[in-house]
Image 1 (cartoon, rainbow, N blue to C red):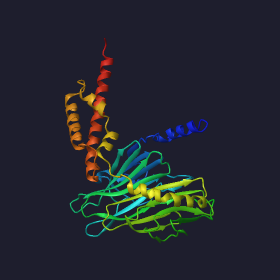
Image 2: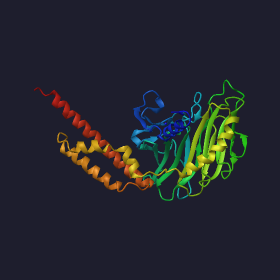
Image 3: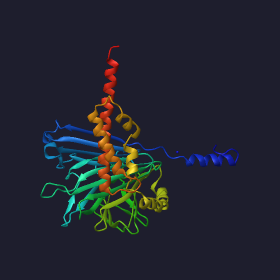
Image 4: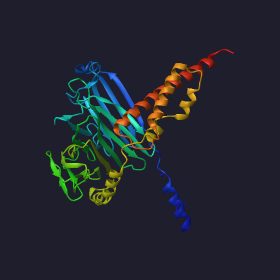
Length: 401
């Protein structure tokens, strides 16, 4: 994370093994930006890619953006914009949708419903925590007003816990933007596999807590009060794996599933909600008839974990993942580093410590964003001090004796 020495010792050893924590999760982040040169319709755009891996979950953003229009994206044709999730891939490109995992809409104070993906500006990727619980956010602007300013942000938060291979947790949230709320949130999956070229008989199905039914290309309404656990799977072929979802019925007023190629659960949050949380999972290697009773038995526990999950972080959690305290403080005392750089780094450090406070209370999303901005500033100044220190060491090494 002894089998048994004759009877008793083995039990003790087994309990010791299970008491050990799972291997901590370290986030792996990749970001690139390149001017487009191949597609004549997209010359003048940059291709931006942002990706984070949290254990076996990989979230990916990729889009054409206009650098001279403050990174306004386009989604006029296929492949202009992707926001996918590599999780639960069993065969080919199956599992949760690698291209369009989630599509939330937001509702403005005057009642307009506005899409986000491929329309609004993507404002980055933040890793907030690593270790036994890893957390990362992708951020988008909300629609800009007449003055050209966005009133706030929409975030997609991924939370992955060490040792929970087959489950992850997702939160869609709004920060700032008084009077704005979530509209619908549509998730997308390809249970087991995308293609059915070799399996023309395949049927897409959804099984809930209470019933089983084939999906259709139009919405099939479900009751979120009683059907809050979904198993998305196939019949007649590709039957040994699929996707799982558990939601909190206290957060959801409407639920439907649609699709015979991608299968898409569509959740309608209760009016006025600014956040929505779901658990997503998958299974593999068992026929769906064997998996279904297992899932139905497991689902209440997953729901309890989802409801109790601390999606809001404390300053200490973000601090522990973001700041190499001892090395930072050591470099502040290194006189070979320019004084001006050390002064800026010290001021940023003091601001971070002041914002941290006791560090043990959950932060609001607005407080999280401000604190993450401070940690990013300190991380960048830490990097600059490291470079200055290494350059000085190199100069000393090159100096003739």
